[in-house]
Length: 583
Image 1 (cartoon, helix red, strand yellow):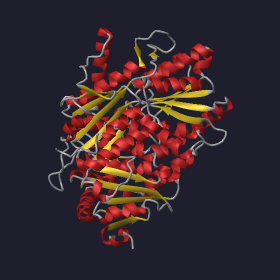
Image 2 (cartoon, rainbow, N blue to C red):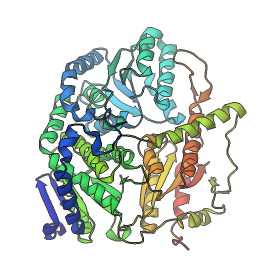
Image 3 (cartoon, rainbow, N blue to C red):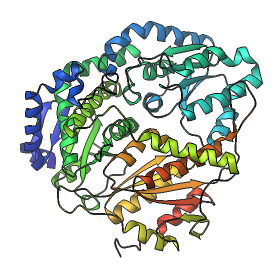
Image 4 (tube, helix red, strand yellow):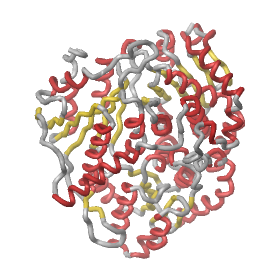
């Protein structure tokens, strides 16, 4: 008999697709659910009652459009499908989405899980300012007919607009103004600056999204449905799955939200997502939703995604595991059983097939709204995001004035790794020993434990992914802490709010590297002048985020990798095994 069956007395069976094994926390979760139900929590959310979260309606009443989106978007399907047919007639072989955070994550999930249907454009996402990546795509789009999707709610996202200006000028120089504009569409709010810019440049189409939907809640809107339809997904089925969840999933959404919030308030704030391999990319979307919605006012839930599951002894008592599996996939059950048997709380969500994820978007959005209510925070704002942007702007301004970044010399160097550490230099071993001595274990079962965030402002590729995972796993296994990985600057739009807005338990390892070739960012689309490059922008963003973390009282260390990234990461990983915590 499995551990899950043995613990049946601790299970909540609210629906066949949802099971919870919360051990000693079950009674507490049940009590909160009872209290919230008595307070008509779900009825008030559907009524868009801002007092569910705060007395002040600012950034709440104008951020609840996602509740009606599955119904409202039905009226937009003809427009979307007509455009997709136009794109197919124009023989676009590829769609390249330029976006960050909520504008890019759902399309990336759709492409990674569903692929693309024969006869439809392929879809890729650029959500980086790393010039090596942009140069690679510059060469590729010159050899195939590409539709560019400029996706930004505000219409002012610096990374997105920088990419748009670069690729527009590329096509302008190659094909002329009329042809260049016909390769671009925009998805943005109705009154954003991008609508006027798209008109000036002659974009093929502008989709004006619902302005009352926040970016991370925008998947069931133009931001998700247009890219999905372009790769041949069925937008009507997407909406039907979302509506089905609204009809049938309210009880489980309430339970999931209360479980996340109550366990986080009790010290189990590391929400660890384990998914069937086929649907694993979905976790990146959940990561942003949870981190940006709950990491504020000195509170937060730390989503842990992409982690290789380990034995119970590598985990501390700060974990809540959520296992999302496809029907008939039992490949991870033994590992999950072992964790439950060891006393770790687990929630299991079963889905029949990948399209059911379109309902999961709604379940997780509602659960996050409930968690925010229980934690007494506003899950729809992002008050700390601007701090990194302001710091980056100041650094860029200083660079323009002096031609160099306002940065001190490295404290030491080890095998081509430059170490910037306010805690003293020396060898990698010595630096790591001092830095990881800051890890704080929970004083008791209801207090918080540190986590480690690896912030990689380096070129993302499969080889680097593997090296980062090895580094991450070594840290976790040695210190029993949750370790997250984010590529910069994309993580600034997903987990950056959490890093600066939570209770300050994070330790931050920033990685930067050399670029092979830099690339100018046009000052204006259609004109040749340039005052800054993508490499300079990326460096300013890394330094700005580092300064914002320091200003928020966080522990930060930076490693600049001058040599091959994988080799440098292997060197750093090898420096870890002989370290003993606090020694």
